[in-house]
Image (cartoon, rainbow, N blue to C red):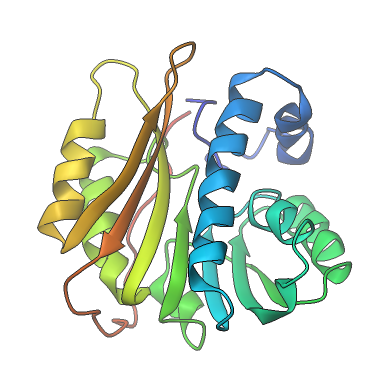
Amino acid sequence: MDTTDSGHPPMTNIDWSAWHDAYAEPGSRLADRLAAVRAHIDRRLDDTAPDPVRVVSACAGDGRDLLGVMAQRADAVRVTALLVEYDAGLAARARDAAAALDATVEVRQADAANSDVYAGAVPADLVLLCGIFGNVSDADVRATVMAAPQLCSEGAEVVWTRHRAEPDLTPTIRGWFAEAGFEEVAFEASDDHVWSVGVHRLVAEPQPLEPGRHWFTFDRG
């Protein structure tokens, strides 16, 4: 599987809690990508201050991107967040981290590909789609991008990740976001590794959440 972009287990024989520990290795590709994602989360929280902000994170892992930022902010109380993670161990770690925060954070152990999981938590002002696009088919990437306006409030931002190994799909993904009604805020590509982080802002009208939809299936193994 593509370990530069994982967040939801396509294989049941992997210890995903142990695998995520690699994010703590200074200078690793995962640590560098995490830092880039955190920077965009921090900026978005700055941009929305002092208003309440709602965040949704799909395939959230142990939540160290969002929760790591919130732990460093004095205004975390204004954040209401939903983290969706399939792996029980990672979800438990996310709950432990969230419990230490002065914020409203719910961690749902569920399949983040199912639209029903997000009922009551959207529209969100910040949507994290990190660790998904490198593990699903190109068609599922497009389906997820096209469904993203269903998760978004007016002017919401989406942060996403994808490796740039050949064939590099990131130019196409950026085009799909434009097609779905987003404008690009940022695109960061590592000079040393193949990871990239994109940020897109919804400029079209948000869409209502369509129940009973399944947007993607992890198939990298």
